[in-house]
Image 1 (cartoon, rainbow, N blue to C red):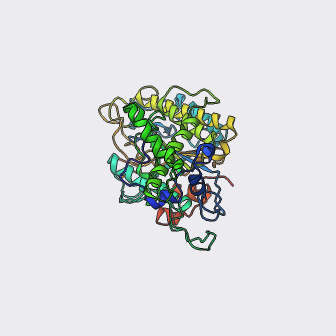
Image 2: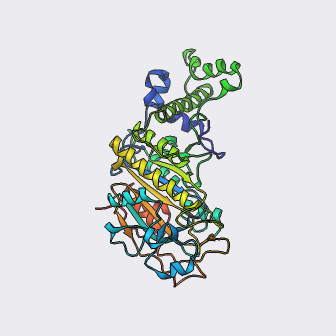
Image 3: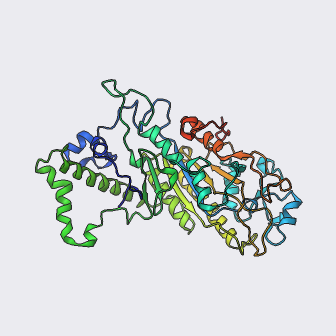
Length: 446
């Protein structure tokens, strides 16, 4: 059971000051842990109840890994150049799902994306067209680093990690909300960000906060008993019996007890949440499994601000297919899972709390290759879902004739999309978190 895949452990002071949120396990938490771990920051400077910050707003990030072909996802069926460029993999106009409630604009969705079409027609889907960045990089790893750091150098901390640092850890906020009027030291808030996967993405790594990451909740637990039964007694002594023996909570032994118990309680809380039966039927895909877990944690009331899931791979160099094929299957899984996720959230009464951002590190080239596939390109659409989004098409579709060495020219900088989410939904300072000035795209209605 790990808190982060990186070698960036929490400090002893940080653990002793706060630790994980243990409120759900109050009946079983030793007294000294209740007195300190439950002593969460005062409202003016903690992860919850920061003035002006909507603590109930959640962001879910859905990464389409591998470079999704945006032109066969949001199809420019009104442009004859599209059909000339893709003689065997283009989507026939008659099969394209039309976006009539947005006026269409000569673009529509791949025929396997009926779920997203439904979200669009319900006013719960925004499609930001032509998203990219200057001097695009066509390497999967470098371009993904650029998207995840919000820096075209692809270096530094993750943009979501900086958000959590600022909003949930007090890093660089400059407030003085402690009872004695002093400014708090920044502290990690592990449950503020959760990634579903073997390791947490760079986007969620901050200077202070490191997210929880797990692929399966069965693995997110203490597994010592599986190794050997003789480990159970020492572990129990560390976490519980040592407290009864009068171990000082501020001592090194107390630190070990706090660390072990914090991890155990967090594991119990998350595993209990995910064990709930969903309120709707999800399609049978790995992405559906991930989003079902996220919906269960939201339903259980976890104070998590950001969740991260992944879907792929979209690296369709050969045999991509058009209305059918591997790419079509991936889009069907993406569309069906996201629709089921919002149906579940609606049944819970939580759909209005959750905005989902879906992106890929780059799009594909305009012209198909000799292997009936597409090669690495540049600009691509970004999807935003939820009842709060400014539904419909945002921005213009890039020209298929005015190209940059065979690739689409981006219309909207991806950091302007991030700025819109930070400013309008998370109520955070985009300039500070993105470490630059980008005019926010209007992504939230009103």
